Length: 140
Image (cartoon, rainbow, N blue to C red; front, side, top):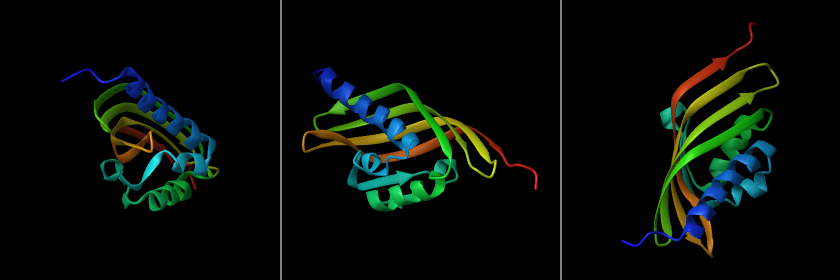
């Protein structure tokens, strides 16, 4: 099997970089454009939902973190490309702080599938698994 074109590898890495930036900037239209219409989000491995469809997934993410200050980091990508599909595993860390004082720092991995559509790589499937979560709730 021939080595994938580095331009594809870099394009997929740039999609995930934009994912972090647009999510933290709360640019919901730009964020939604990173996903296929049939996107599937599986956050059950970190205590979250299983969501089918881009619009449903974006609405759920937005409802849960729109008011929070967030910082998402990904690194150490393992990307495998096969034609117009690809898989990737990204080590991740996120830090979220809500106006009521709750905060979360998490560490884990995104396990993803990408599909090239209309010449652009998009995230088709994403499964978030967590290795550690530090959740703080202010005293009442």
